[in-house]
Image 1: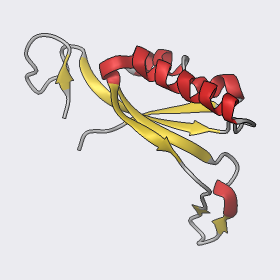
Image 2 (image 1 turned 90 degrees about the vertical axis):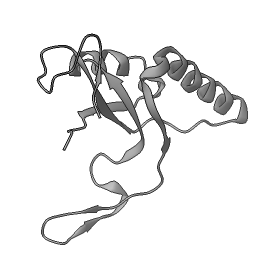
Image 3 (image 1 turned 120 degrees about the vertical axis):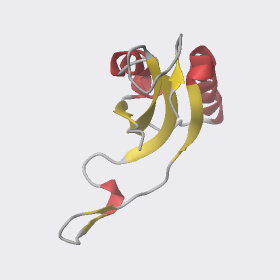
Image 4 (image 1 turned 180 degrees about the vertical axis):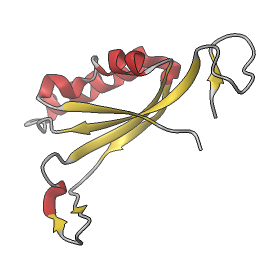
Length: 121
């Protein structure tokens, strides 16, 4: 459900309505020690804290994955760019969602963030 940034929402996107965005995390290195793991977890906690109420679902890391292709073949390990986790956030635009993603701790560990608007059906 869309939230309005201000004013009435009349079913027409005349104002900045808040949309949900899926962040799919790719790559990033695993911590090599308990201490490093604690630093990484703190970085994520701090980032989510900065995002505040924009965080709809903090998500989770994901394990090994497979990609099922249209021809029925299965690529082990998620294919060319396997996901390593996800989150759902709210933002006023794709640009706003991209700006928020630029603070993601996975970027400092060599990973990337795929940003996709969740379509309302």
